[in-house]
Image (cartoon, rainbow, N blue to C red; front, side, top):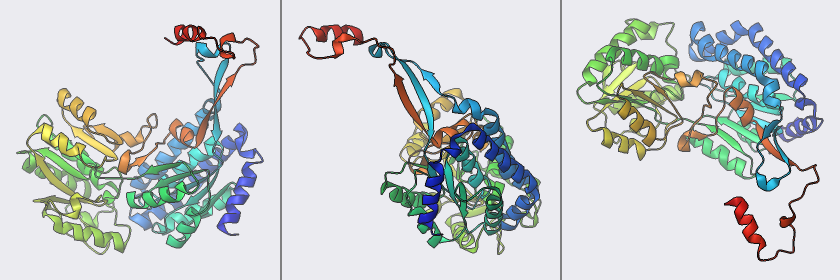
Amino acid sequence: MNYQELVLKQRTFYQTEATKSYAFRKDALIKLKEAIKLHETDILNALQMDLGKSHFEGYLTEVGVTLLELNAAIKHLKSWMKVRRVATPLTLFKAKSYLYQEPYGTVLIMSPWNYPFQLTIGPLIGAIAAGNTAVLKSSPDSVHTSKLMKTIIEDLFPEEFVKIYTGGLDESKAVLSQRYDYIFFTGSTEVGKIVMSEASKHLTPVTLELGGKSPAIIDDTMDLSMVAKRIVYGKFVNAGQTCIAPDYVLIQKGLEETFIVHANAWIRTFYGTDPMKSLDYPKIISKKHHARLVSLLQSGKPVVGGSFTDTKIEPTLLTQIDLDSPILKEEIFGPILPILTYENEDQMIHALKIKEKPLALYLFTKNKKFEQKVLAQVSFGGATLNDTIMHFANSNMPFGGVGHSGMGGYHGKFSFMTFSHAKGVVDRSRIVDLFFRYPPYPKKRIHLIKKIVK
């Protein structure tokens, strides 16, 4: 079966209305949860083979997060699906108004390699909960996880409901070229532009979960040991291959040396005297990405780390950065952390305002005035104050970017909302008419309308 036939088969199945019932959706979500728990060890092993993740990190950042999303969807699905009554303006007297959450139909979910399980299955949960059929395209770079997900999905669901493809660039292009009712993409900004261009051919709505250069800002009001601990964790989990990892540090001038000392101490505490030998420190996904990151090491002076093997790059702090270097222009997406300083808060904020909008922002301060100034003036997808990456874990908030870091959001109920259309309905079954809306229109009637809408 070719890609076009598969999408047509999914559309035909969707049109049977089977995926729209509460029982069907809940049953599919429960089956998915049971399959994940059944294959838990297999998933953790696959993540370890692809990215060198320890079982703990794999469970914490991939399996556990996904199960929490599933639990929330199963628990709240009925309430999410309910028709919602909304207020009706006086001008529509007499009427009632409602919102129906309608599935889009057949959706495409394209996922990346850095969190290959979570960022494939997480959006799928939202697509199923909303009542869609789904085509998945996982990354070929995370070969073991993609292969395992293919086995799980094919054992679990018929292809007219959910189908997963795992091939390379040619298959990605072929899958993307089909017409869908919604596209959800997680990956780089450059590929996101290609996805959006293809979607525009059919006016297909999209969610783009991208990345960007997420700053970690530090002032002189904080305990620098605690700050360093939390930045080191957020930066070097998954060896920095995280879209919301702190991309660079902006620290008040004069504090950088102390911060570096503390950061180095926490790196050794987390990963030992030789992080390259640590079973808790992941590897770089591929030779291509490894080579790119090694070239970025030349952008400044390594004051911590800087060494590498064939598969790993040591947690590295850079100073004396060449301002024209690619490391200050492109998302690093690896275990290299540039340290920059600022003297003037307003100048620093202005510099952030004129940059492309990042996916995340991290601000370490006890100064509420400074905090409010940054939050009010700097645009970003989401933020954690006085810590890193934790906002991702709160499914009561939408997670997503803005501008070059993406559009749209998901997690929890917001995943359900993303994969469904809020269909507004006004019910005027009661035969009560406002006479003045009908012609002919005498000149004095406009004064009556103005009294109502003033």
